[in-house]
Length: 183
Image (cartoon, rainbow, N blue to C red; front, side, top):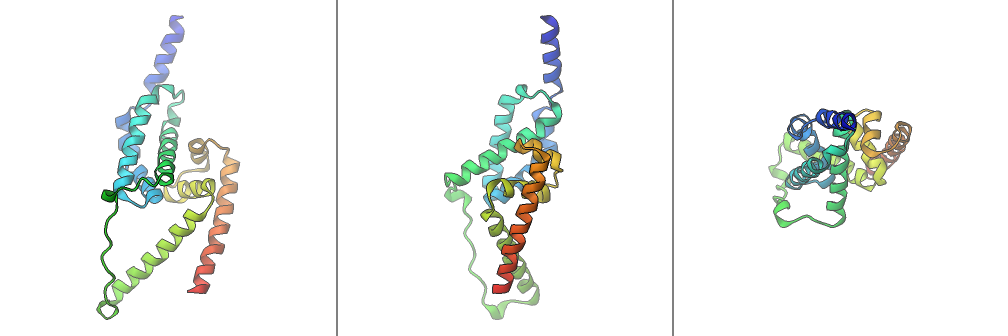
């Protein structure tokens, strides 16, 4: 009986501490949440909540290498809940300045506006994807995770990740090509 208790405590001792995970994963988690919520303040709040929930349940993690994936999974669920319930508060909504008059724009500003427009088209196309495809694509290309890491985060197989990424890329290519033709 004493051996079982000592092996369990050895496993829990090897789970990364919350502080270590925050240092190693915090910035990328905020970037991930911001992509899903389009709001830096809400993203930071959601990451904070994810770390709180992780702290409460970290002792359940048997594999220390799964801690970051578990944390990302918590964050993705929080982002979905946030968006589903429309939890955007007024403090999270920044007011947009009015567009400048066209004659006041220099070439650099025009290029930045065009780039912002293209970025917003990509984000809208991403948001229109089925949830699993969007999750796989964002984790792959925004966070740079491997198929194995994505699979661990989402609780699916690496082959399923490949399939979702392939389908999402084909859909995005089709939708974005349609916006270029219409522009």
